[in-house]
Image (cartoon, rainbow, N blue to C red):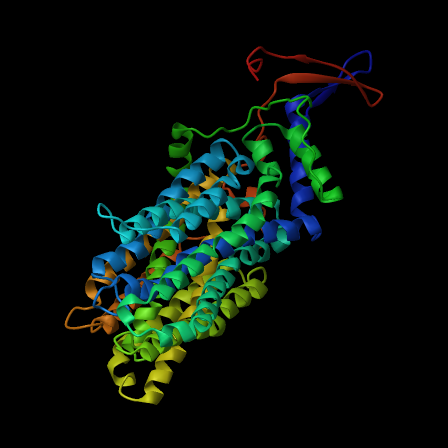
Amino acid sequence: MDAHSDASGKERFDARFVLDERRRAALAEVDNAKLSWFHVKVCLVAGVGFFTDAYDIFAINLAAPMLGYVYGHGSPGKLKSNTQDLGIKVATPVGTLFGQLLFGWLADIVGRKRMYGVELMIIIVCTFAQALSGGAHAVSIIGVLVVWRFLTGIGIGGDYPLSATISSEFAATRIRGRMMTAVFAGQGWGNFAAVMTALIVTVAYKDKIIGDPSITQLNHIDYMWRILIGMGCVPGVIALYFRLTIPETPRFTMDIERNVLQAADDIDAVLTNNKFNYDPDAVVQRVDAPRASWADFKDHFGKWENMKVLIGTSYSWFALDIAFYGLGLNTSTILTAIGWGNPSLTTTTGVYLSLYNVCVGNLIFSVAGLIPGYYASFFLIDSWGRRPIQLMGFIVLTILFICMGFGYDKMLESTSGKNAFVFLYCLTNFFQNFGPNVTTFVIPGEVFPTRYRSTAHGISAASGKLGAIVAQVGFGNMVNIGGTNKFIPHILEILAFFMLTGIFSTLLLPETKQKSLEELSNENQDGFLRGPTTQIEVQDGIVIGKRFLTTAMRAF
């Protein structure tokens, strides 16, 4: 700290050095904090959002066959055309892409706290609207669902950068990976809840389905898909209050609002008392710190050392989501293709068994692959590291998709072969989550400066959803080339190629374990604050006055 004494024994300190030291001390307090109830609360509040997101995204995979029975008109278990099926499945990823870019940018401009909860309200309203959708002469119910699912996707998209940024900025360094993984693991439980809800609803309506004399007018199935979709509102409503009351992250307050003293007080209050009190009358002292702007963005990411990281996080997520959503939104189709469920059956008993078998198949994939994968990452991510887990995941997935694609026809020739295919499918779900599905979420929440953390995470996540859209459009248009579901093995081979490319994009990324967010930002933290340009006078350890050195900072 710069200081000098005059003849009277007074010491004068430049205020920017005082605040810079205060900033360092406050960040160190966050980075070295012990696990507390507040950390658990952040994980639960953010995790419920991902639970809701996954429920709403993957429930349509189970609702699609139900919609097909009710509105397919002559094609049991399927909608009128592949275009309709594609529309209701791809609408949410398209909306998610826009939501990730929009909310990622807004969170860096107006604050994490101000945006947190807004995206959840969008999800709640639009999910409820889906359950009440209907058709008319001018518009079909499928068209209405496409619109509402697109809007739902915008809310879901906002959850990615906001939850990642909030959990990473509140986390202590040694547990940051586990905190972020615990948040993201809500996705697996949301998928599981969607499957369980579909299974319970199907069993509950068993007698009505079997007792209906005509499969073309199964009105009770219309109740089933509405209940399945509508239940997605419940966890969102529960979490909304807590999201609206979560405090602003100290890093946003310090580095973007440039209010170091307020951030330091917030940290003490949250970590000590697990409470946050906002005082609108508190003195605000702005500092001069790097500020987000288009020129600054180009300058920062114009450096290869920073640009390669953004390329690495974006393409890795793009490659991963081609497989994750290409399979995740078409699991029912694949189960049907291998003979697990058969929606072409023309008896009411066959209708029930088809829906039941699809639910059971999805449940097996969720329990045997998805959920265990998240927790394998949870236990190892802070010790083994993010980069090794992502590399390992892409390598194993490449091998698995090669085996499934080139061995598809041979495996489907026998019951044991089909069982082997299901086992390999479960392994792909496991190594997606014990691999790049978790790390592509975690790494972008760590490696960028605070003023661009949410924006860059949104860009990376949007790249992933672009991959999901490409996969879904490609799957929907190619799956029936050569006959019904005949192109599936070649789709699996294509997925193997994208997993291979993910290996190379991972090499662009740094290892982030046990490093502070400031260390990972690639910005020099010495003299990070450049003002305010005041001088503090101290005599016998007591501050007795201060004055501006220049007029440059009076605007603050």
